[in-house]
Length: 181
Image 1 (cartoon, rainbow, N blue to C red):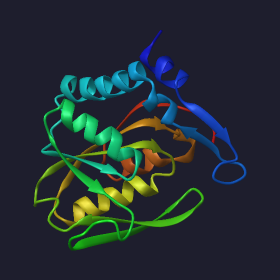
Image 2: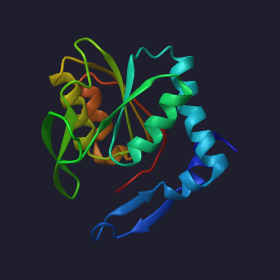
Image 3: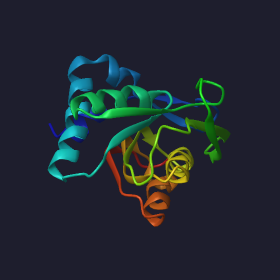
Image 4: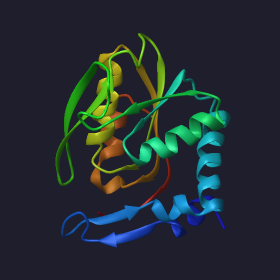
């Protein structure tokens, strides 16, 4: 069975969450599966190694991006930067507001997390409209960093996020995708 199919088989779909009409792709079932979790991290690592992806550090977006990003950082012997919801980081932060498929939110990052010209892999579980990933990229770029690639487990291409990021000069890689919303 192809990696895409194995990963997809371990992801649960929850209808009408967090609101009616949304088909939520829940990776907690993938994370709890030892073989699925290992495959996910190994496949992201292999992508980076095989493509000679250039990076200095990995950043992950709260919350599932923390899990995936920190496991990937360990596998690649890299450092890790958390990008969080407001009020969760203890030192001086910068913030970026953004819209997503069903509302709006804000992300924050420590002002000393990214140095000028630092190459950053940005990680999260899902790419939908691209609002969250773009906000994370904007934070990194505001600090003078360079987003070399966005990595995610799931892409929802019909919602336009991967196209949006690519149009903004950001490479995108996902392990699997789902059509529709």
